[in-house]
Length: 221
Length: 221
DNA sequence: AATAATTTTTAGATAAGTCTAAAAATTATT
DNA sequence: AATAATTTTTAGACTTATCTAAAAATTATT
Image (cartoon, rainbow over all chains, first blue to last red; front, side):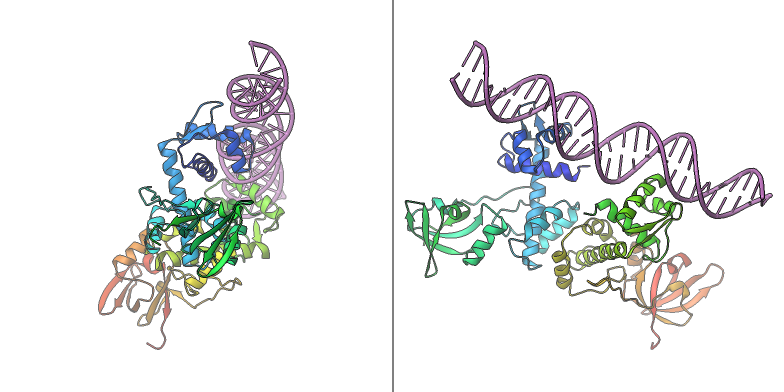
């Protein structure tokens, strides 16, 4: 049986290692988990014994196939619960993370398959992140950061990089939501701020904001 | 912060002590929690320090006001989740307990108040047990055991004493659900079995079954 | 009321996950 | 390539929740 702590380490390793592709260092895990490197070493040994990670002393860890499956399943559960909270229980997108962090550890295959059906098989969570299907497949869309979009291009908002409450509230305040259409008007070379147009209103976006907002470039527009 | 284990002990004490009214012995808790009496003593000391229970050595425990509030809130969460699983996710009433045991520990006031609203403020769970409201008030209905019902009386099925999968499946098989109307036809003195009539079909019910099914006596019928 | 049976508590040990401080290995710098 | 800086691991300790075995208190029986 896998413990809650083990699940959280596996999740952290998955995210830090570019979704299970890259090696992750002890220190990186320690920082992510807000714990000490020595604790990470202990846990990593345990995860290695249980064959969730490949581990060589001083070399960091990589998720095994088994470990990656577990990570993807946690992500699937997390994102499905987020959709539930927003769509059915009227949570706003900046309120869901904390609760989903708890719900993602509930163990019941039937629960998740039925929840998925109840929500009509959503493909993305409220922050625009893809929801792995029951086989663990993740659909990728070719989104780019708003900061990378060309002047004059028409874009649709499809996701956020930073999903902190502060950032999401900023977007709410400025009427930017997933699905919002916008046009890139101007980039100020001095600070890399961007002027965008939503419907008929212009808005200046700082580089920091533009670096945390994913858009899909609508070539036909 | 209260731990998951502490919550489970409090819940056990609540149920064993007639919903927080009576004193509960160490051995009774040990049996319910499937652990050893010595472990219970340790935990009970901790719960006492945290003022969830009143405890005197060798005298067992009683829930404090604070302890009872926690217990009732766990029961509320458990039963709301059971309703959700049955009404929204198509679980059958014999499948919900295990999952609800996990979901009842999720900590979020908003989650529960919104779930309550989403389910349209249900008053009873799928087994007929009352759901405490957000203030902890529990509505009692005057149900009796089927075994105590008078010959000739018309009854409505309103709950089960035993909610084991085996018992619930027996009821399903015999088309007995909450809300089912039945008439008490005959009691066999030799084994206290009861003959009941549902719609126009007669059915013989053993004393053991009759002792685990709650009914409301419909005086007007 | 004395003894027996049962219940409860204490004492000491174990496992999971964490910590600090020090040692070892790796990586960076001169 | 030697030394410095950083990263990682080890060793030993602490906490929570558990256990076994023995001691203490309570309850039941004669």
